[in-house]
Image (spheres, protein in one colour):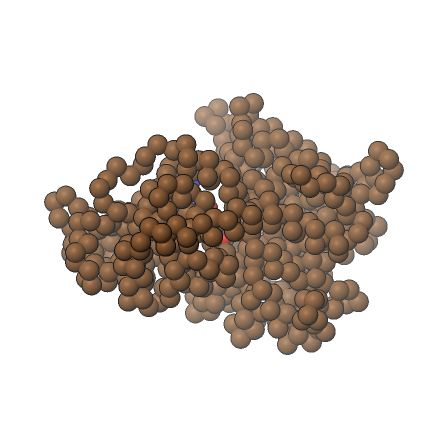
Length: 533
Ligand code: GDG
């Protein structure tokens, strides 16, 4: 566990929990249990830091404070007091334009190198006014905050900003809420030493926030250091340049002092873009970019998982798959980047090529509903239903169906049991920043090990060398590799899994967090770690 001297302020699209109303209409926290929250929340709690984010609910009365966690709540962010939580309330339509529009209809496909799916609408973007209009509107929001008139502030945003600035407006709102919270923070500890907060911004939702925070802090004479981590790929220059406002995005990310990506390839892509689009001086040996008299550090910091927790869950979970059949497992959000349609077609090809497996092996696909308001995701769901129906109709017998499909979210304990009891994990995204499922599968191999089949187009494919790598676009390759996995001798499975486990055990999510903070300490000497246990 890290022990920070200076406070850390995490800024992410969502808070580490969502707010829900219970049957009495009271707000309650519902914990999120992802790796990011598990690793980062304890550090924010320990250092008296803050978490800035959207609370997951549109509130009629945004002044209502965030409730404390329930007494029995054992989740990772349960210890986060309500004064450590900074909810950013965004009016519903504005949030929809920003989140479903700019974030998920533009940046998500573009950054996953799928430009044909990306929507480029100036209406959702437009940031060319150099903070001007957006900034003054945000000031109005802030003054409305000061007068406890948030509702008025939001109304002003809606009146005075053309629909167009949804992305920049929301980024400004996050930035101003962050600065507002920084203003109230004690900048000296009990010994009178200065505590320069580290503001850690996460992901593609908030690529413009840093410069707004920086400018506002400068004006208000506040000190802070800014770090950013992108959880999705950063695309090559040839793809990135398709975004008509690529300049602004680069400038926005360069507003940070430290920029982290999962792997070196994404760092390289980012450096290429800075050099070619902005003409920045780039030091490729030390991964540095010079911009506006500052030097920005760029680092590959691959995220890991809470390894021990998954291993413990796998050891404790009762048998989940009561079946004599071998199970090939897929676990994903239902997203076109995850390659689900290709995967089930590959499984069909496998059954065509190896009819001896009919009745003996099944693909279990867990698909978690995601972005269900977006048309493309609804179409993907329909396509999956049709394809699975077709393949099951083609091969099923009275006692066996080739594909078992769960469209929904299962508990983590159950998930750990599925991981443990499956002979093969098929992790075949078309493109993926990292992919945590591959790592969780490895952590859960506590009995006879299974085999991990992995796409090289996931960040995880860069480090998990002992997995069987397949091209998800090549159905025959996946089918043949699946056959190889199902017939792999136990000693080879053990040898591969031994090395995979060893790496993930060490390079777990705490290691990722520590690495980020260690780089940040070197970058910002005022921001200090006093112990890593
Ligand atoms: C982004 C990047 C990057 C899935 N089904 C269930 C369930 N899950 C959990 C898994 C895993 C997580 O969801 C999915 O993680 P991924 O890494 O695959 O994907 P994204 O959501 O796309 O995340 C990605 C990640 O950020 C971190 O930086 O790796 O590349 O796209 O943890 O366990 N959990 C439960 N039930 C399910 O049914 N409880």
